[in-house]
Length: 249
Length: 249
Image 1 (cartoon, rainbow over the protein chains, first blue to last red):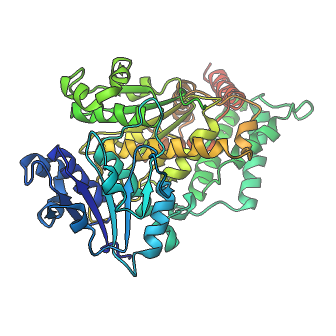
Image 2: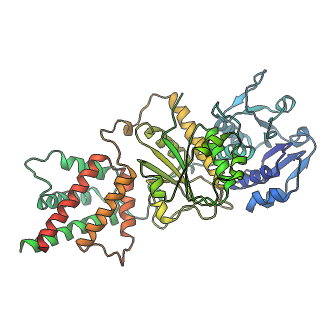
Image 3: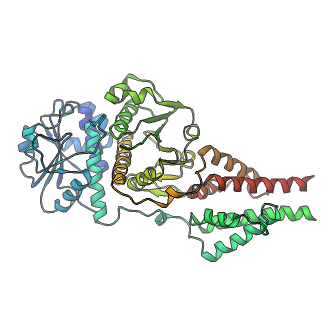
């Protein structure tokens, strides 16, 4: 469908192996596969395997390197996650703008998405190896995301941008409906039937309608009733009439 | 800046307390604060506290309840995370469309974002308590997200929609609705009443339900009934019962 194999996720100096495993899972959920680990504190690790669940293939294939420079050596676009604004402002992207850029460029160059340490992020030297920084718009009262949660958000935006590009991201509500929609004529017959029953049960007085039919129309217009639902509603009305007719005998 | 206090995150029957803690952190990162736990397997828990890091205030304030119905009783908009398509398709939203809807409506009604079990998600009965389902567009090779990762993505989209809105003066139609939306509890009473009447008019056999109530719930969930409409529908049901009782005399 689309190829995200030119996009790497690079984790720098990760402390907790659980975050490496959770990163692998988030990546595979979103269709990414290339993980690069710069000086991980504890890898390989059973904890990482446990959190990766069905994404252990990504852990097995992960490349472990000594420096960020080495990790991004073959990349033409490097974007680093940054939690805060820097003394020297760097070109800063929103996750969405980051993802759109990645998807625009990934067919011609290799791309690296770089994430720093759990406690302190990327240092200034590492941030300067990035062409752009990306910042997840977090609440000022607690802006520090878990590492794998940040990876999840960025990979999600990348997938969304990829889907948008091929025009399938937006799946309309109606697209997968199991029944055909009722026609305008069928719906009008329903309103006629409904009004008749409401009169019979003394709920509706056509001489003093008080917007009742208007409100019923507004109610049922808000959904696009399907054919089976229409049949059910008409069936209910018919059974009500049948029971009331019995009474009149 | 903006108020997200009308939005709850509801976790149903969570197995791993780490996911509860990670959910609290994701929520606080994105500016949400209300957590509701339906029958958590292990709570309170030191593991949850550890993963929440600086979001333990959210764990301390979490409401623990016995059923999803209880959790959403005061909510006028309930959206459930669904991993797969159902036999009877339900109105399905993308995370972005979900977030936009939540932000449009959260000033007038309470909103619940509902997430199911780690291994099996929400069951059919729980999904039918939701007005809409939301699905994160995951890769078909591994579509199962970690619970807290899914919460992260949805809360991120909610925050993004809230931020977007500050920059936009375009107000949706829903905002100017003349009536309040019915609460979850009112709608449940309506379903009970509807089912009773359908049995009385011999339209519905609880021994052989053939998905009838499911289809009725799907129909009325799409409408998002307001309070006056609810009164009208209940009035109709009451008059039908009255006429049928007459007959039985």
